[in-house]
Length: 444
Ligand code: PLP
Image 1 (cartoon, rainbow, N blue to C red):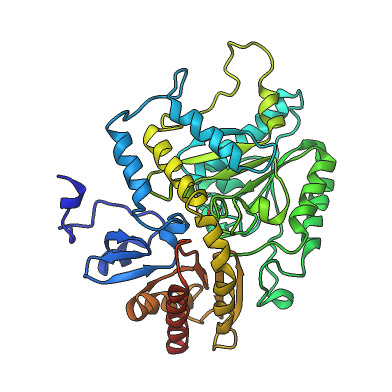
Image 2: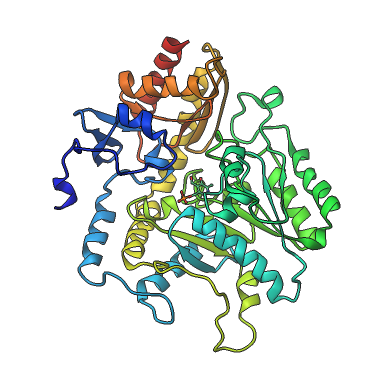
């Protein structure tokens, strides 16, 4: 049976254990998506809703983008699968070159993965192996940050900073520590872009290094803007300070740009917007517009080149995935990058961001709104938690938005997260903000 023939209401929802979902609750009142087009999802009950979160922060060019769909259809009839283990196919090389051209200067090498989680674990492994390759095997520690989300691999949850995603899975990686998070409502509430206060939070890195001995630390990983824990833009100067401290101690800096990469902030990467170049950048999501799984780790030439010594017949890095550089994903990614750059979608993202910011900040002063924060087409509206429990306020607002306003938003804790496709117009911004205004007022 072709997927298009799948019934809109499956006879049973029992077999599929849904990820990051309260399964029993969901299955009592399921919400199913049966179609998509541009900025919209079609729900099984016949409603069409505005997708204000680009699927799951990934469909940046809008749903079923014609260029991307056409490229995938063409590819599947030519080459379905080819391994990248000791053989290859041209598209993976072409795509890697294309990514190198988009990346910050000096980051000309790419390792392909299939997801953000795999990109994070790959970047951490490359960081550890890089120091070994240079004869510095004493560097085994990794430093993440509180309130970080780096996916669900053991590496990612070890450096991640969300307690409940770590506590059920045992001791995790050895030698990991965490910087403090940067959210500071007392000083920075209702900031636009980078908050003014908090650069000193980067100095906590020096304190951790003093504690552990900097010569044992391999890498520091941060999301330039933390996404899944509530959209937390970095304090002004913070990322630069991290860069300086890492440089001083020979530590690699990794930016997890799984959300912020490919135009979400109006530039190719967050590294470009903030003017700080890390040693490695992890990506996924927007790379293929969400149309097929793919991730990529971009790295500085020095990192890559450290592995390219010694015997030419030896495998330089014992790591990789069956689907690294999958032909279908490469085709989708090439078409997606064309849409972002040649069709001007990243420029469109940048052009719409000021109006998005302006409208969102009109929510300030509504009952229970304790913060609005934004950068590019990424925003969080934080709500006063209810006594009923963490997250219940934002869940109620999100439910109201989809049911009454026809707008799909995402609740992360007590923050409403927004990351709309770059194709949105002012009228869509108005609809999103109007629906939020109504939902916030009616749930107050
Ligand atoms: N890193 C960041 C910053 C993310 O936001 C996510 C997913 O939201 C991931 C990693 C994990 O990506 P995936 O779900 O594709 O494994």
